[in-house]
Image (cartoon, rainbow, N blue to C red; front, top):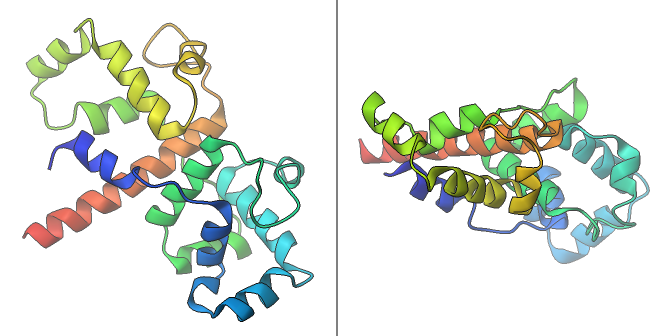
Length: 194
């Protein structure tokens, strides 16, 4: 399966924060009344904020500012994308460990993204031809924009080279989870094809 097609498959859905949190705390297996009781319990919001802080690699105050309930209505798109990729990449057991132990979110640089998603499997001559194409930079930035969940013009602000040296760490975390989800999806696809 083509790498870009595989990435589209894992990034084709929008996950609401409440859905992600229900998955993480295993509430998605409960009936609606039990879910409501859990979500209104005293400690639930604090646990949600703690988990999101660890997954996203940002401080808790920022997350509190996104809303007063598990919908986190002001959560930016990049954070929603990160949660979606984290859900694809991590098992419930791993998510439990994230909440209860020290955790560092995965990170990936744009160069890792280029190599693994856009250039993987190409011979060296094709990689050079692809990267020197006049359309490559625009296609690369469009792809990054969709994966991360930011406007394309924002990516142009991160630097003139393909390395994007000014890319904030939070977006590198999003790329890290996206690549982890991609690898997991690719591995499952290869095993089912065998």
